[in-house]
Amino acid sequence: MGLFDRFKPKNQAVTVSSYKMVTDEGGGFYAWNGNLYFSDIVRSAIRPKARAIGKAVAKHIRKSDLKGKMETKVNPDVYMKFLLEEPNPYMTGQQMQEKLATQLELNHNAFAYINRDKNGYATEIYPITSMYCEAVKNGNGELFLRFTMRNGKTFTFRYTDIIHLRKDYNENEIFGDSPAEVLAPLMEIVNTTDQGIVKAIKNSNIIKWLLKFNQTIRPEDLKKATKQFVDDYLNIESDTVGAAAHDSKFDAKQVEPKDYVPNEHQMDKTVQRIYSFFNTNDDIVQSSYDENKWISYYEAVIEPDIIQLSNEFTRKLFSRRERGHGNIIVFESSNLSFASMTTKLNLVNFVDRGILSPNEVRAVLNMAPVEGGDEMIRRLDTRPTTE
Image (cartoon, rainbow, N blue to C red; front, side, top):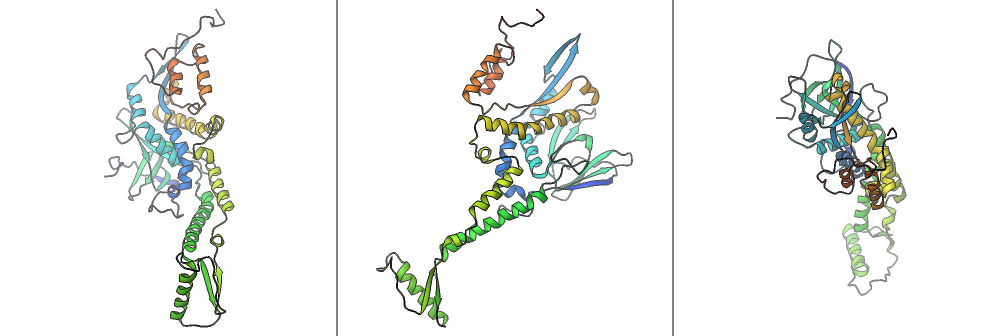
């Protein structure tokens, strides 16, 4: 039984628009046919972002006004805390966030279904990996999404029950623009280059000399003369190895492997174009970045999607009334995780000013929290300006 088989389709609907997903079907050997995830270049470009988004900690924040004084509570409702930590029986919150981030990069669209109880409260969240998705409306104008799974089954869910992340949101009113048309020419180049390298290696291992005979001879004599040439001049145990001489019966030409190897500069340019499409570079992919490079990558690539996650989870998990009472979902992530030790130690100066708690600084230093470390501390000589 499939993951969504227990969810029944909704009412009759009318098609509005559709979106073809970039699927991951096929064998382990990558050849361009739409299977982006089987490319080592694409996977290496996506992985750092997916890992970073997976490390973001989802929290339920409630800000309320109590007699003119703002009060902030973290994870006030137990059911929501557990939902964010374990969205469904098959994965943790981190794993679901990584899956959504990967789908967002591959398809520029990522979906997750919210299963609710009879009172409308969210109980489970399931990422949806479908082959095809189309937007439909019923007779009342309510928007639905119809998903076609890999096994051919279709499921239709209300759009209000779908967490929908988008990238390159431009032409379509509902879906982000597909990356397939942009990446197809680049992946064709990569595939052709890879095939050329394989052929070059095979040719360099098999054909090292080309013998051109100046007269017509029988096939068996051709093989015999070639074998004699190999035995006399290419065998390391031959007495004449290192020197060769032959009569006018044939011309010998050495085949250089470089004649078959594709242009290395062109290969690097293509890879860099793919990296640029995914807003990454060699330092990020190979984890050789420094503090400034990571912060730039975080702010340009990771932070926008974390904000989108927060906004989408908030508006789909809470009603307008609940949001009006200050309920939001925040994905907390630090771009100081890869900061230098000097920068991390300087955070201690923020503790006695009430900006960071001791446990928040310990988290940046990869240290476990301590009891009482969540209480804000302030030096006695720093007081509000009204006092």
